[in-house]
Image (cartoon, rainbow, N blue to C red; front, side):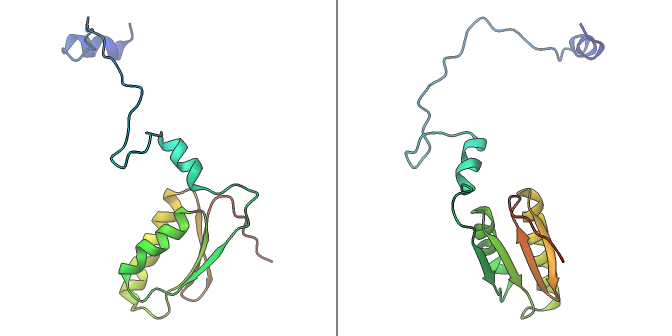
Length: 130
């Protein structure tokens, strides 16, 4: 027994053993009636296969409330070019911060390609400069 487990048992925080077993239901369904899938399976469906052509979406948001549209396209595996030149500096900064978090959370990246123009690239898209 490890030292951490001994301390946890001493403090009464050790794992308890139960005699009754829990029966798991094999057919777990979501509210929409679809079969349950693990997060990895849902993520695999979200990203397109390599055989499908890549798409680049050009968006010119007018306000911060346009962020869900950017997020939807990026999560679908599309590269997004985001031009925030028509926005106020405060809203543009918020939107770029949102996009950076989105790219980081989905294992992609964000690149500045011009003043107030940014590229959100999914992980399978290679960006080269030259």
